[in-house]
Amino acid sequence: GNLEEEIYMDCSDGMITDGEECLLLLQSIYGLVQAARQWWKKLVTILKQIGFVQSLADPCLLTKKKNDKYVYIGLYVDDCICIGHKEMIEETEKLLKENDLNLKVEDELVDYLSCEINFNDDKTRAWLGQPHLVQNLIKTFGEDVKDLQEYKTPGTPGIG
Image 1 (cartoon, rainbow, N blue to C red):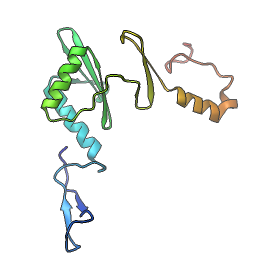
Image 2: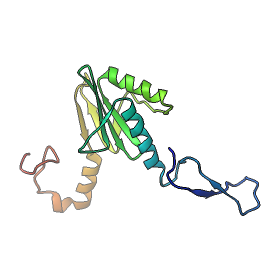
Image 3: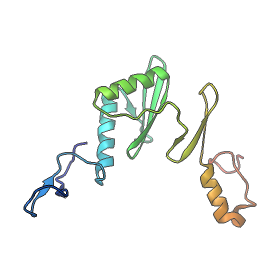
Image 4: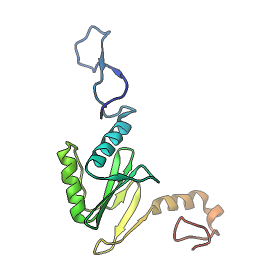
């Protein structure tokens, strides 16, 4: 993505310089503190241009509807997930590539952002969870939590 401020960096090893020179960055590069934000801003701009609407409740959720079919994109730092009707996902992938974005497409999603994902056979429903984190909590706080009520959802207590 494009930078909004002037950022300079030391010359890389192997560059021939007089020792006092530095480089002015014209675009964000990997590892730069601003890189993830600039990528996010560029992606959101492109998504809006191709018809996505940003959620008022969460700016990291964007949706698109066409002919009663939906596609949802969730963004987290420099990672995203796209779910919805197959045709809409394929159209979104095509449009993003036309906007010169490099995509990593995974047909079999089994984890995302440290969440385990299990789909039913026809891929119409999914379970998301973090059993490894729960097990770590039990291991760490075993005696403190062993007699507490378990819930099926992290939602409202009392609904178990």
